[in-house]
Image (cartoon, rainbow, N blue to C red):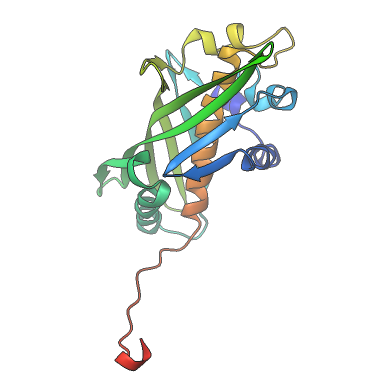
Length: 222
C-alpha cells in the first residue's frame, strides 16, 4: 500500500500549487483551508489505497536523494532543517542520535475545512499531530512520519489517523473518489499534512548550511 501511495513529481507539484493559495501563516499558526472541491476529491493521491496503512497505524515513508553529499553533511542539514521547519510550538526535536545519524521530532499541521448545510456554512478546525524520524545516509535520507493523530480543536478529542472512518470504505464513493463529507474532508487534511511537511522539509534540506558571518567594522560604518 505504501508503494501505491507514491506519486509523481508532477502530481505533487500540482497539489502544492493547488494548496499554495490555501496555506497562510498568522501568529505562527499554519493552516490548510480546504473547500473539498471536486478537483481535490478526484486526485489520485487521495483515492483508494492512497493512505499508507501499516497494521493499525498510518506510516508515511519516503527516501530523498542528495547526490554528492556525505552522511554527516546530510545529518547536519537535517538538524538545521528541523530547527527551522516551523517556529515556536509547531515542531520540536525530541532526540538526536549522533552515532547512527538519526533524528526524531514532533510536528503538526492545522487545517480547516468548510462545508455547507443548506444555507448554513460550517467550519471545522483540526490539527494533525505526528512524530517524524529522519535517517541520514551517504547521498540520501529517509523521512518517516508515524503516530499520526487527528485532534479536534474545539472538543480537544484525538483520533488515530488510521481510523477506519477515514479509510477507503468510509471516505470514498463507488468511483474511488473522496466523498464530500465529514470523514472525506478529514482524509484530505490528513494526507495533505504529511505531503506538505515532507515537501517543505526537503526544500530546506536542499539549502546549504550558512553559518552567521560577523565582520568587524568601524563604528562610523555600522
